[in-house]
Length: 275
Image (cartoon, rainbow, N blue to C red):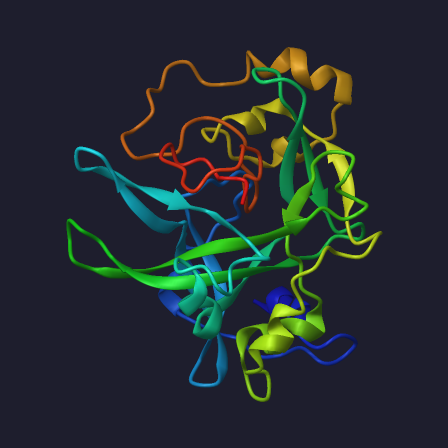
């Protein structure tokens, strides 16, 4: 919690207090490879204060034909989120920040994707701009919180690998984005949705084991030779576990996001759409 409070304070200023649910904090464990439908902590404003709450990654989209599970909207394009019906209410009143120490992106042909981990050069946390919504579980009737990640054009650091990236907030932008105190100006909040400055991120080729959501351990972040990643990818996925219904399929994921797949309005498989 101390790292979060220090990372989400004003630039160059003191750490800012964050309220957290003790039960949720007790259940926390480090994650190295998450995907849509995973529960992850997000920072939101509540009663004018910053609060850290558990949330499920992915807004619920349309239900599939035949009564199948709804699609997951894991990402939203920043340039249309304020006005699109799916996101505009959340943009106006339910903005959040998603903490992560990095994210993965991929290059190479399908079936031999090479993952790269983008992270702060000196370590620490990134502050990803997101939106959240309450959602009722159709089976239990319980209401939980769901979040989606805003994406923008890639910065100079990410362009060699992909043309889009998550929106990254500076430490001094957090209150404005959350709408805390004097930060309720939606126009000013929208102006934060831009590519990160050059030098914000370092890139590291990492293990192709990342390509399966069944792998979640520190070894995923070990640096590998970029040319060695593709040949190993085919052998990296577990072969003794069938995917659960409604769970994300094996594929690009990241400590916070998968920004790997092509553009589309929804992600029936649980993989993140390029929005």
